[in-house]
Image 1 (tube, rainbow, N blue to C red):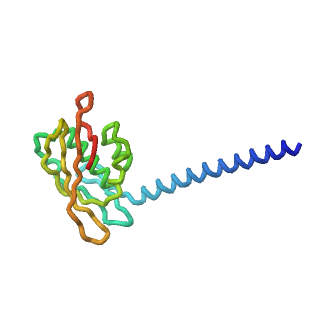
Image 2: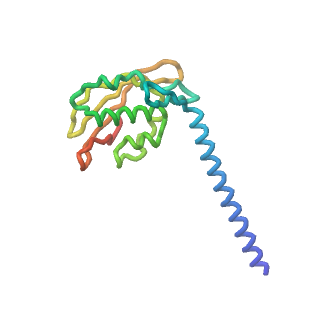
Image 3: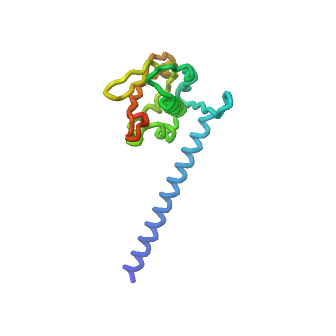
Length: 172
């Protein structure tokens, strides 16, 4: 009878432990979602919803300096421009899921570190073709905590998928 009691007590303890761990993960996820929501404010700009994110430890990022409607580069079509804008906005607003949706299907999470760098995006450089890819430089200023912004840029690599649609396949 002692073995049965010991086994039952062990199973009960293990079940309680696993239930507690599950509650802790749910609580942690809820706290993270609430923190993210409190760091994001919504504003209505020219009839469309835009999201401006802030990081409590840094200067707010921004993409409002880019004149997206003024881009007239023959290598950048409207689909590419839309993907660039969505990707830059997701970086600025630190929106991981939205950022992943702007990237090609096989890119994964390798570029998630870009969401941790506060940047003030200022302009789109001239695109150029290289080995069947279109490279587009997005210029900006790194917003460091010391108050000294430095010029920087991200190069977005576009490549056509099997159906002929341009996809962001890398960012450098």
